[in-house]
Amino acid sequence: MRDELLPYQRSQGMRILSTNLYKDDKGDEFFIWTREFDDEQQRQAAYADTYNDWWVNEIRPQVAQLIELDSIKVRQIKPLWL
Image (cartoon, rainbow, N blue to C red; front, side):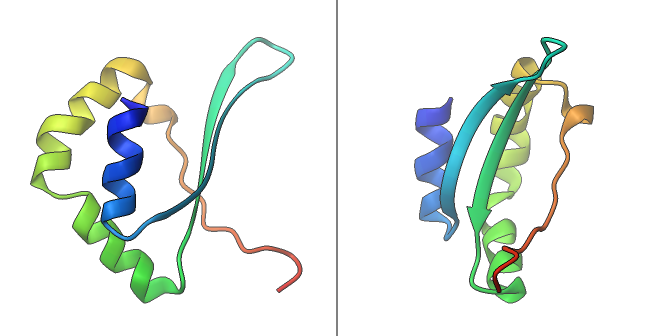
């Protein structure tokens, strides 16, 4: 699925900085996907282009088989040095 999603999201204007899988001391696994946008307007346009009907109908159900959708947490962060 990663081989399908990364190229697709890049083609929609998203800059993928990193994708990593972590395990904490309790054994819980976490997938962290870091993306970067020029500004809020570019982020909104990329989201609108990416999360379209195809995504909702085809990709989201596949994602739901791999992870708990309720566990998804999206955060907008900024580097401290800016």
